[in-house]
Image (cartoon, helix red, strand yellow):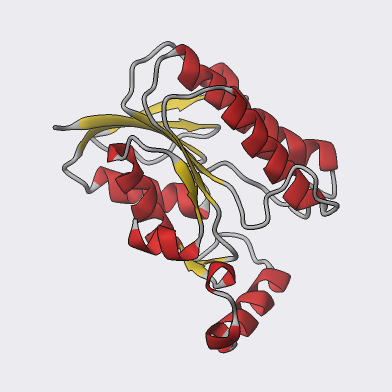
Length: 210
């Protein structure tokens, strides 16, 4: 049965890879992308464009929401409030929209180490986002917690590239959940989650088996 899915964060590494896989996948006959700037046209693609993501949303029945929203402190010029807005507030706002529109499945890209009580700012924000998402009572919530992501990013991230190189070299010695996650593997898992109606939290091994 063909499905309609909504993807948020479709211009980032994971979101765009998920979008391209979905457009090529016969399981999906309609893909809605919520974006700030228009993407290239495609017969299966419907675009909701607005500078403020939550204002782009409109009443709509979809089979799943895939949330790939995320930024970095560096990208936001060190602005912690902006980071919280993107990685927590927008995600939870999208979750509220999914709840109000009776979306049966929502899948969210979080991060390894997400913990609302963490002293590490990044982990704390991700943990608070997960806490707030769980509190919404969505029918099915999938939380993906990859470690560092590999793939062709548009922006240059020196620290991340060094970390990936070290992690790849030491992969046999690193606990599995902390190993670098291929971007296309995560994207494929997100699409497969559309059909799974039992929610959960997934790390490296579970994501690769999804």
